[in-house]
Length: 473
Image (cartoon, rainbow, N blue to C red; front, side, top):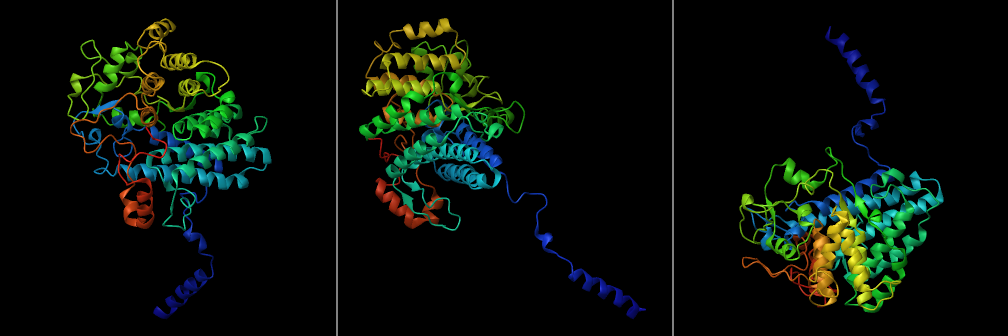
């Protein structure tokens, strides 16, 4: 009986060996490739999430710039970047969730798109988003891996000079601007910022070029002037041009502010005394859009110490909505840049520094829903009007642009570092001086130590108070 059974079993085994088993290694539940348009969408979404999130494990710029402060756990308000490995998390998010997606999208365009003009538009759009991301990275750390950064076979990429990277990014913008063709198709609805509107992308790219030009205005005035004057005729002209990432009211595509504060039920932050007192002094009508009141007044918490959540104003219901948008670049920022450019004597096609300054403030107030009558009254105040507001053009513009960048901590940090206004004082319990850069990730020190050592030495030391190359004041 046993002999009879063995024969069929052996035949079954032998016959199974003749079958093609290669498909057993295929994961049928997860795609091995993705279309370029999906990767582009994912890159945009991930970038918005990283810049918008208030999660202290990755993005503490609203705390550094004292737009918000902490209630119970105050390490990050005191510039502790190490306990939560914040530098490493920011680095990984930008490289691995944003740039890797965008690079993969770029590689896939030629496979997914047949039309040559559409390919050019898609590639230009991807590159503009890459330039935006790279300038965030280089303005966070200084020298960073750039040319060798996205090669999966190079585990130890060298760091490139920050200034060289920055100038290359400006050149890339010029190339992408020239490649954009409004009469040709593009990613369409997969573009989560402009829905494939190439005319809007042209304005966005020029506005980014303007903004990047102003960052280097102190360190290289000639280079800045050339970039600014080239871009100025083609920048944003209204809030309708804003580069907005729109979130939805239902999960999972919601603003991470809602996820981290409302959905999680956490009461970790209150607006800081720094920004609230400033806006109170100016009688700023945006206060009701930014904050709640406590006993009928706007009251900010003290930076660097524990604050009772019940005793201070809170972030407003508006900014905690799941569909509250994130703005990569706004018309208000563009007008502040034009105001500063005019004050420096750059030719930006008409309009005085005072006129652009007023327009910038109007654009911000209008975006936040402030009535026209209140806008006029605010601009008429001697403490606000360009002619009578105290200080230099840097102080006038710096303070108003800082306020306008509420909920954009990274943008506010960059403006404050450039113009040095408002003057932000480190809390008495701070672990360091005011941070003007993130330190390099510990993982780079451990795994890419030779490149890290060279970069740290070149920039003047891997410290939070080592100024970036353009921050010369």
